[in-house]
Structures are given as structure tokens and as C-alpha cells.
Image 1 (cartoon, rainbow, N blue to C red):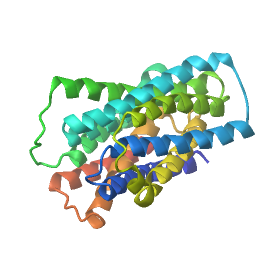
Image 2: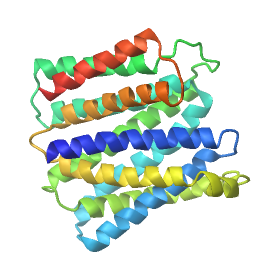
Image 3: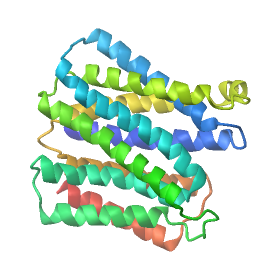
Image 4: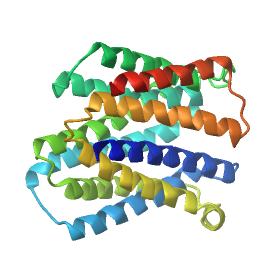
Length: 289
């Protein structure tokens, strides 16, 4: 079942990413689309975890430090990412966000005592290179790297990694228990920040987005809910360690999106992007050995 969960998480992660891409295309030119998207997405996630927690209630005050880390990391990541995408190079921003998953895998090797083999080392290195090649467009960005962008990108990077690590750490420390409690309270706290951000945003185009594009963040929210549900299960897996799981999810997602963009969005891939896809396939095989 662990491999079923891994495949499901990977497929849903692809759906999650593509939903955001379709939303951006559908709402191109509209005001404060990110604030609207995040509000709907996180609201769906909180609703889902609320239902799951009501069905499977549990409570342990010792879980709250983990909840606080996840909530802060999530709120910081999603808020900082919006600013980083606005003021800096989109390609580099996406690159660092994807690399945060690889860092989470490395964390497992260092702090969780997961087995380190030559295949894992080569696989992680190839994953990082594959991501860089797939995201590099070859076009000179009109936006320059600034200290301000670097600060917000670092916040998004650290916040995203903190979410993944704190979730897995909580499950390991509590023997796979209180997962629903953890996610409900953590996402509910993060939603407060998202709501504040939305209230401060320009809501001129909200009605139009509700009419024509609200289904995209709903799909993303449902995908995110199932992804985290399966990630909680995989957090205590003895078959698929984090050092393998996160790089596989990251590189497979990027490969699928690159190919999808070629045939659906009609975006031509450069030769080095095809090399990146090939390296990603090799990395996935090595990490699965």
C-alpha cells in the first residue's frame, strides 16, 4: 500500500500544480488573484480536516508545538511566495520551492537515521540538477535578483521545508497518532493569516473569479487534503523513507508538468529540459532501488 500512497501523492501533486497553472491562465490580468486562490484553497483544506477530525477526534497538548511550527511555516511560505513571485524571477523562485522538498529528504538522512546508499546520494544530486534543467527557460528575465527577493524566497523555502519536516516529525514522535488533530489545528491557524491577507487585498475581481475560476482552487484544496492524508501515513513508513519519497515526488511532478506543457499549453521544450527529464527518470529509478 505504501507505493500506492506514493503514486497517489505524486499524481495529486501534479494535479495540484496544474490547477494553479490553469487558474493563472484563466484569471490573467485580474487583481489580487493569489489572495483569492489561497483563501478558497485553504478554506477547503480546513473544512476537510475539520470533518476528518470530527470523525476521528483525539487530543494531546504535546502536539501543539508541532502544530505551531507547521502553521507558522505554512503561513510564512504561502505569503512570502506570493511576494517573491511578484518581485523576482519566476524560474528561480519555482526552482527553490521544489528544492525544499529535496532538503526535506536530506533531513531524513541526517536526523531520522534513514539508510544512506550510493544510489540515494546519486539520485538526490540528479534530482537537484534535473529540477534546475527543467525550470531553466534560457530566456533572460526582465526582473533582477534583489536582496528583498532573496529574503522572501528564503522565507518561502524555509517555510515550505518546515511544513514537510514538522508533519513527518510529529507522526514519528507520536507513533502515527493525532495526525487529524495536527492538520486541523495547523491549517486553521494558517487560515487566519490567509483571511487577513485577503481582507487587505483588492477584491475588485472577486465576483468574476467566483464565477469563472473558483473550481481550480477547490480542486487544489481537495488534492492538498488527500496529499497530506497520505503523507501522514507515509511518515512512519519503513518501506519508503523520506530521503526517497520527497525527491521522487518533486522530480516526477516537474517531469509531468514539463510534458503536459508541451502537449496542452503548446510550450516548446529546450534540449536541456529534455535532458533534465531524462535525468529525472534515472534519479527516480536510483531512488527506488
